[in-house]
Amino acid sequence: MKDNISLLAKELGITAALLYKWRQDYQEFGTGSFPGKGNLKLSPEQEKIHELEKN
Image (cartoon, rainbow, N blue to C red; front, side, top):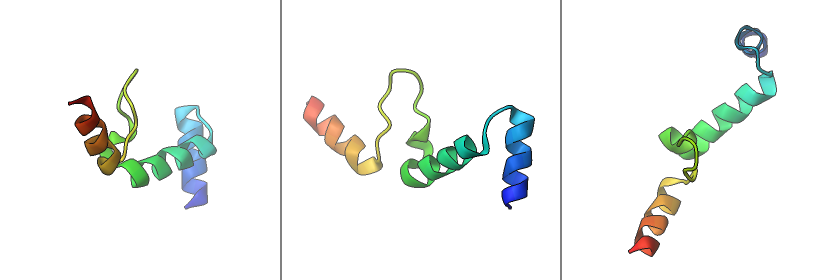
């Protein structure tokens, strides 16, 4: 698997470490891993707290 990650990273022009970080983020935060520019990366629990604090 490590070779596959390294090959994929090379094809994408990024480091394998970055792919591993993205995978880890996705495992921790799910679809909230990549919220977009200026948005917070929160776990579902943190997102609920954030929404409650806004109100």
